[in-house]
Amino acid sequence: MMPILTAAAVLAGLLCVLDLMLTLGVIRRLREHTALLTDLNGGPASIKAGEEVGEFTTLTVEGKPLNRAAMAEETLVAFFSPDCGPCQEKMPKFVEYASTLPGGRDRVLAVVVAEPHEGTEFLSALAPVAQVVRESPDGPVGTAFKVRAYPLVLAVARDRRDRVIVTDDRVALEQAVAAA
Image 1 (cartoon, rainbow, N blue to C red):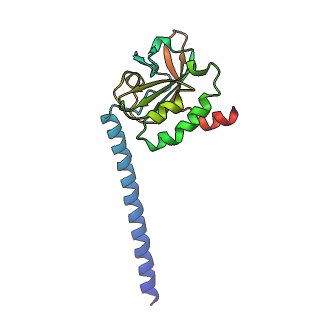
Image 2 (image 1 turned 135 degrees about the horizontal axis):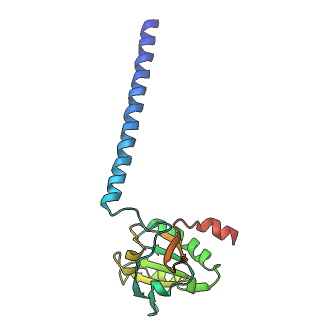
Image 3 (image 1 turned 180 degrees about the vertical axis):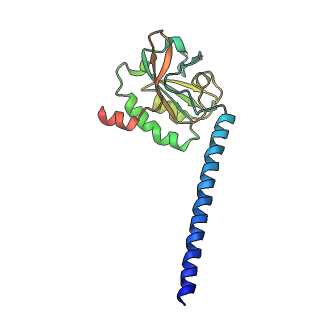
């Protein structure tokens, strides 16, 4: 009886090692596929810290002209989509944080990526704390910031050569609100 139990234990151990090797192989392939899909979709989900913001010209929902040159020294920029669950969770934190920034609305830009008949609740919530732009997914501001995923919150500022660059591509709204 003992040799049968030993053989069963060895067989079970070998099966576990085989399963572990197959699992690690699948994880490696998933990482490779993720990298390939990122490359096929045009790269990362957005512009990265240190990169220059592209040119854009648009109008806010109030009809005020807005372009890259008119951006304040330091500006908080966010992109939201009403169809996005994480956007609905992050927007109240963004509104709370934006309301504490010095410089008020002039230092905050919120882009709602929606069709003309969508996103009115987002526009209403963001209007008191930000300059708000509504545009389609391939709109001028989203294109200038290379946006491919939502929500996205960035900090931008002018560098020594007066270029508008991204200074932070992972603004932590939770920590910022707690500190404020």
